[in-house]
Image 1 (cartoon, rainbow, N blue to C red):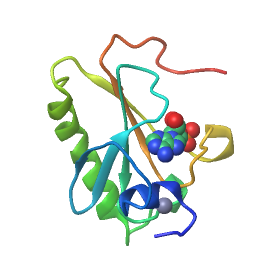
Image 2: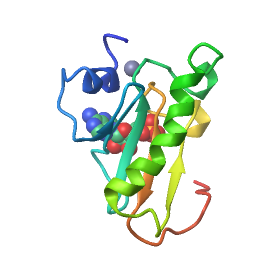
Image 3: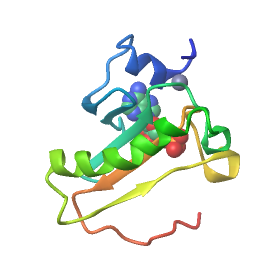
Image 4: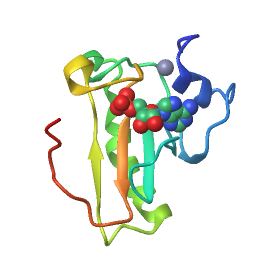
Length: 117
Ligand code: AMP
Ligand code: ZN
């Protein structure tokens, strides 16, 4: 855990977060600025800075995230409708918060699959 990381602080309940799902490995909470009716951030419960920092030691946390999407879809009632998962990495990827996170987005028919600008 990193002292100055806002997502670590949400996980530790040091700052408020609207947590919708969590287990031993994963925490999922509502994005502060949703881009769709359902916009949830799914993060590992250890501090991993970005996809560039995934390794054999922390891989279990990342693997568990892949499984959590299904649970979150169930909780939000969109398993059948579908959803989109986005992970921004680094400067060019537009990553602002330096704690690995996946945007789980849905609740409406989404537009362009790849955003160019
Ligand atoms: P990214 O640009 O991929 O790093 O996304 C960071 C996301 O974190 C943005 O969508 C923000 O709206 C969201 N965000 C920032 N601070 C918080 C917070 N305290 N609680 C929930 N979401 C946040
Ligand atoms: Zn962190």
